[in-house]
Length: 359
Length: 154
Image (cartoon, rainbow over all chains, first blue to last red; front, side, top):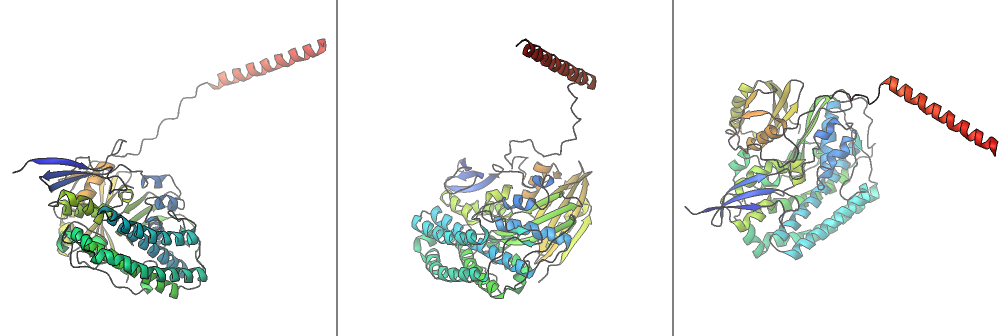
């Protein structure tokens, strides 16, 4: 048996924008075990629910993460609306759907950029982030924010998008789509990219179920489950297929995410063509009493929100099960047996969001 | 499509059995969460069978032991380490045990709600406060008298 060495990976590492620590146990160049340590940015956001009014807590939960901030707000308000058994106006549902899909596009473009940066393809990284910038501009125009949007409220949304703005956004996405085809083609066909991704970090279908993989990580292991099919927000009226891959490797995860960018553009087109002209919010009176779950498909996978109220304006518990937390176990599995040089890339392929994980 | 939503209350000894049953039905373990209650904790175990959402609620007392289901679902280990470290739930036999070292937090874990503290003892008694008020008023009156006397001289 060769000598075992422990190499610390993180919390500060060039591929990690956020801090997570892994103790990598190596035998020569092969990883035999990985021990995670998290909590460097634990802010106690779930605990804060005891000190904030349930309406104000929307602003707190949005700050869980800067990339899926819209969806965190949306998941929480949907869970509270379920306690009240409130039916929000249709236009609000469609607006939530549009913003959620825009979040998915910008998140996936961010990830593609980081992946390109991870294997040293700087030009590709800049191109991905240049495209992402256009989505952020649209967010700024429609919500007033580029990172934190604060457009969700319990009972609907706070801002409306006029018809001409929606038409312009669809035009923008149509233009982007052509450029994106060219850009993503590099990820899917370039020789050097393929050599880094093909056959690396295999996660089989059974392992994905046992280890609790979520989102693109799970769908890349040929499991056709997408929480959007539950029909929350306006997804009930939207026609889309679940994107999966049979390859189960890092390339498959990249392929699924690229497919989802184009799918999101299509969903936005459908939502804009079907959006009804109704109110954007209803007034909800009283305090929540009871408990409810809400499930969302975030860019990184299924997120679960649990809320328990006791009839006062302060909730007893608000819990977010974020996709990265559940994807950590499959990630540790893919690390075992990998080369040390592939570790940064394998950590990236789960699209880690450590702020979400630690809350 | 609307999900089938189930929330059943069970005792902790039935938990491994329910987990085995869920595994047999090809369900995924999607989350484990702990909620502080007046007497202990409510643990919520959620399984997704396709799109159906099956939840088990286990109400336990403060130091009551709960068996781990990590041998049935390996993904449970991370959740169980989390609820033990941050909430202090006594989860036993976790197959991948990080021994309260998963989270790197400066504050002492598990987080407990602090017992209500006794109100601080006031610095002065009401009699002392009254005496101080009187002294201040007398001082003010003396100063006023002195000013008036000075004004008369001028």
